[in-house]
Length: 362
Image 1 (tube, rainbow, N blue to C red):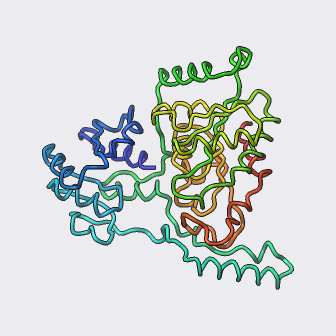
Image 2: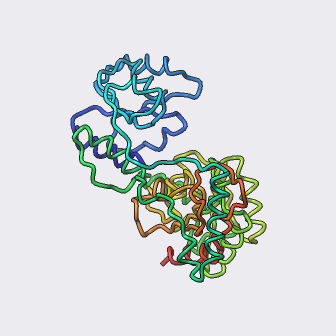
Image 3: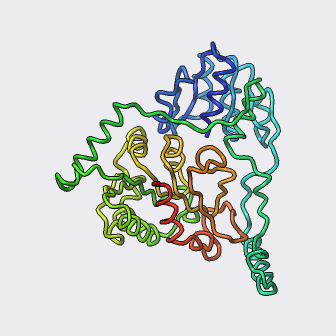
């Protein structure tokens, strides 16, 4: 979601030497990004002082601090970069030479008591109303929220850059795609499957943030089984980290489909290549969701505890993607775990997901 801001920054300073500092595990994201001159990395073991010293030796003139953490501001302050711009936040404003005020709205967790109060209020309203659909919808403040793409562009605009919206974009090369295709052919179970030119479909059933963002595994299984019956020559690729491999195998077993389980078996660049080959990715709100959308792959996403208005995939309002929500008053709550019954997720039916996936294939 920062890639539009980087492009606008490059437009504003076409002759500048632009370096991006990122965790070493994410360095692959920025490969082949034409808006960057250099990718600087740090490890989880490094502290702000060692990172700041490394940056100081490179004599940068300006630091745009995209994260909102105190640590990120401390690093560029310790690097003695003269101009340091970022959003105003507690415990870090001292380290910035210029702070930018935030827009209204944001990800504020709902307390369990507030969630129960909203549910109870909606139930009572529905009981007293003959027009249930008109009464149970509760305002969640989403009209006041700013998508993260807009937030990053607004920060860059302080420097005189244009703030017009752009879709996030990542790039994989033809050579990477050819390698990925060869890997898939090698993983087919028969020569006939390899020659059928299947429709590659992606599945990402996990979400690192927590279980509140995860559609039930049995629902994923039912959905991919129904989609496979309707699509014809359809092959599924499952994605995730090493900890998700068992979950992907479990879903494949429940669905009764032949699935290539890539969870924990790819580098970041390989993951991007496989996602690019997929026609559609059926996924929770997660990192792979954002990767797929930025690579041009359509995503179908059950949204529960989080808000597509804030962190939805692709360009805000892009109708290529299918962002599904249940009509419950406590969503979004931005919690990692649900204190009640996960109705925001269980309220999204398998039929809706299947229908959206089939529409995405047209």
